[in-house]
Image (cartoon, rainbow, N blue to C red; front, side, top):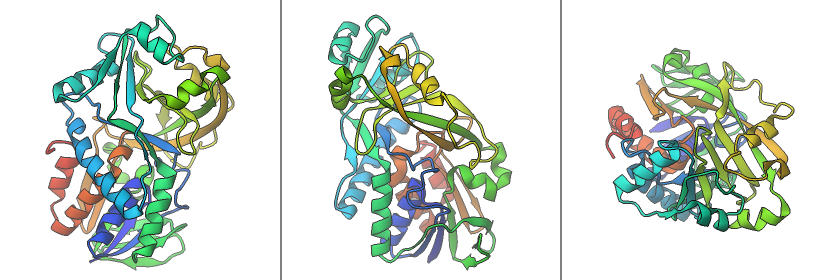
Length: 367
């Protein structure tokens, strides 16, 4: 089949990879460059981990995600995964860190529970007396997004995929299986897969009742000199407890120490707008992390990167079939780690026509 994939974030790149491996004629269209720094998957690094709430199903789905990433590393000839493990810090009973711990226990997954005094000794960037406990697991780490995007794009071009950068799609005719590009060119295909991330509502505005776009930002920091060695060796921090909804990725690949929080987001009608960080925005994100992080005012802001994500109300992934078009949104801020697996599953759905099976898997209902 001839298949057009709209959007070259991790979902689009992985879908094009899987479809190309199956022998299809694939055209991948990206509105910017690859990687696109404005896209949700255009950042330096993202977290992969096992921990999820016990009832979500996504903790089990990570197994398939790891297998898919391993297949991709084999094809690329190198891995872009820093397997440094992950950690959570709980500050309040019933906080998200504790929910993650309950999920690990329910799944029978390995972890180490660390009492607060010992945790503050092992990781001196933690403030003693500010948290209940920490736990760590070896099954997690950081995925290097920009290296992955560059590597997949190179593999696609070498294996016959028509990869087009700066080719913004302005309309999709789902019934005809065609797309129109900003330069007026119309491309036709047997199937169209739309993985446009935060820009999907520009193509399918009727999905606004299901998907909501938010503008977020993350901050890259330099820690105090005496804490640099500790951060270099630290696991990724999936959650800092309490109501912060905060995560941290230590220096890895080209990325500096990164802080991000689910509290720092606002609805965005246009994912292209408001993409320049405001004065003091980096410091505002940084300061959300005290407690449990110590000495935060000694951390220097080096870069603030804005992002745009689509979210569903239940924070699960989404897809829908419209004529010859399959719209996929691996969204809600935790989709990257499943990227390679999503691509394989989307390719299967395109070939089989079983979009309902894909939807159930994306929602972790059939893991």
